[in-house]
Length: 150
Image (tube, rainbow, N blue to C red):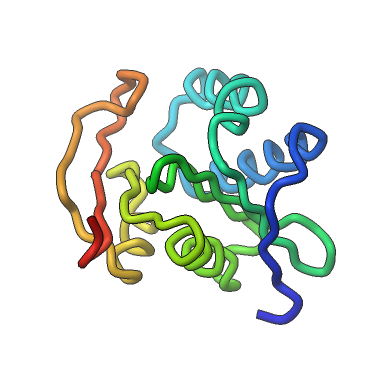
């Protein structure tokens, strides 16, 4: 992972860049998401979701290429720009969240098989399932827990 670094977010000034990363990642991995739901989530990222978590930003060559958000030991979000997928960014962000912020849990959309596989490969196992996402939308969630975690 040449020149990849993880740093704390610089706050609201960089939210537009993080929203652009989110959009790229979602376009590449969330084909199950209805356009109206995608737009609604995107409209709330900078105002509601990003400020609610401890944000970490992955940079490569001085440019943000991914980010994670943690709250109370839960990984609430991890997104990598589509052009950087498979380059170790997600693995680095997850390792940082587990090692530095004590993450032991994450929810993943059941329809996002690549994400479910990503977490399973890194020691997470299914601890439960919900028929809908946290907003009641029809996107089942797998509740994952780190093996040996709390």
